Amino acid sequence: MQSFTPNTLASWDRFTRGNFINSLSGFKSTHLIGTTHENGVYNLGLFHNVVHLGADPALVGFVNRPREAAPHTLTNIERSGWYTMNAVTEPMVAQAHQCSAKYPAETSEFEAVRLEVLLRPECPAPFVSASPVQYAMQLVEVIPIRHNGTFLVVGEVKGVWLHPGLLGPDGFIELEKAGVVTSSGIDSYHNTRLISRFPYAKP
Amino acid sequence: MQSFTPNTLASWDRFTRGNFINSLSGFKSTHLIGTTHENGVYNLGLFHNVVHLGADPALVGFVNRPREAAPHTLTNIERSGWYTMNAVTEPMVAQAHQCSAKYPAETSEFEAVRLEVLLRPECPAPFVSASPVQYAMQLVEVIPIRHNGTFLVVGEVKGVWLHPGLLGPDGFIELEKAGVVTSSGIDSYHNTRLISRFPYAKP
Image (cartoon, rainbow over all chains, first blue to last red; front, side):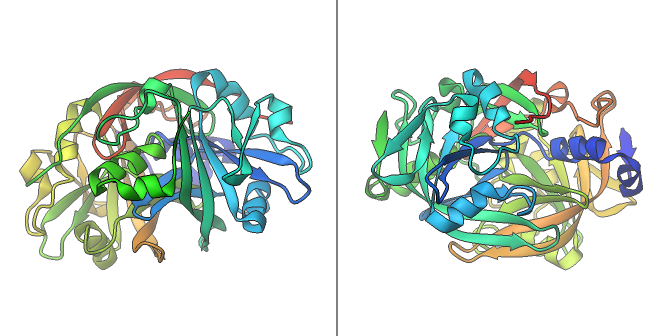
């Protein structure tokens, strides 16, 4: 196998190291996160690092980069207490990736990338109309990761909207049928093909 | 769209709710995590919720369920300070899923599911020989998520081993070429098909 020591990684330029370490940790769960700025502008940010934290209460987390690198979504969430999470599909991939650009806080990424806003009375943050899997989130906790200045943002699911036909009888949501994509590294997007589901494993 | 309120989710049995919330948050980065028990047994656990935290220092995190539900990997990491992360491919999927079974701490999952141990002088924890993407991790911090008793385990990458031919000139690791899978919910595994990589987005 090809081996790489920490010294090798440290000798690379930051773009090469960034691509390497971002892709190393596997395929990620890309979401567009919708928030409302205090001036009323609807912001939209792209986040690759989303985790399931628990089903009861229904908690989902995402990693936010250091505040100086990615301030808008986090600030809007802290001020309003609410955000939306929207799964990304292949027809939306170019627009979703464009939401990773550093627009000013006063610019609505919805308008900049031409994704339609969907508003719902259950949540003050905007949804992405084109997304087949949308959920409303209420902030629970922003946990600082002191070692590198990033944050784990923990929220509770306060409402879910799915395209019809995705929900199975056992509660499983067929994301593949919805065309939801997964990402690799900072700029690579992939469709999926089911290998298999497995029964609950016992020793 | 089909809508689901928190009251609807709360009315479901815990298996249905678990499938729903686990799959809601998207395709995940499945890894086998190798550790060494204080009695010398090599343990192997399956973890779906892995995130990139930063490239410099190279930090990767994973979510560990509450201690009473999933104690072995976390205890071994806290005692030894080391673990390995090993990407899962289609030929290993059934064995990897079987590692989610609750074996006693004294049982080596490597033996139970017949995955070959690979030892390296750089790390006291065992690697999965069949994995094309293996990395050695040193514990940085175990961060409790107080709201539900789970943990974010933060570690630093201390060595990487890749099958030849996966590393691109810009540092991107072609996980798809390696056959690395992604997971959905608690029991569904998927191959990937590249849609596209995109250039760095600017406003």
